[in-house]
Length: 189
Ligand code: IMP
Ligand code: MG
Image (cartoon, rainbow, N blue to C red; front, side):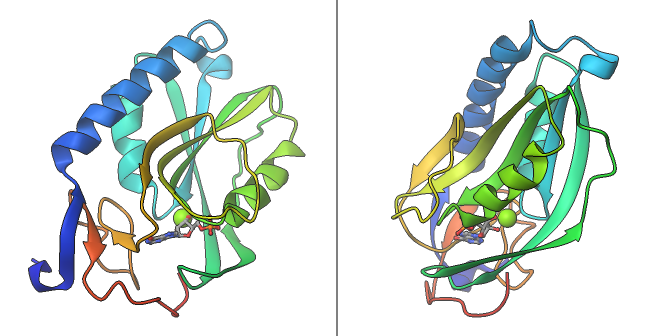
């Protein structure tokens, strides 16, 4: 499946699984005292659609209860040059005031998407607001975003798989790969 189009596997299923276990252990430790259950439970805010696999696996690896929430963003631009124009397609309905909130994101590139999202959620007065990103590209960040939890620092290449797409394809791969063309994608993503 897709084989001819993938340059190479960057992160295997096993590597992803091990990293998620590590992150979950750290998060469970960090939030155990602050987040009990019910109205205090940690709120995982997934950014659709890219973070869906990561959030699903992370939630199951945590040893503390978590509430799952999602919002849909659409960012436009190429892999190299992010326009920073973020469109909110579907917002959260949940009240975040006094809640401990963890944004779960797939990839940080320029940082502009996350900067926008942090501002968008901060006004709702959560008790705390942190970010957990599976991948962070080694590139010049246009926005300096505080990211406490990072899975992997990766080269500045266009990646797909494990929820991450190119033109809505490859999300269903269980691993993360570098796209063969590695061309600068100029379609909306
Ligand atoms: P940023 O705003 O430049 O940090 O871009 C972050 C968003 O762009 C992420 O939420 C991803 O959806 C998308 N993105 C960044 N790099 C890649 C990639 O290599 N493959 C697929 N999507 C990407
Ligand atoms: Mg995204």
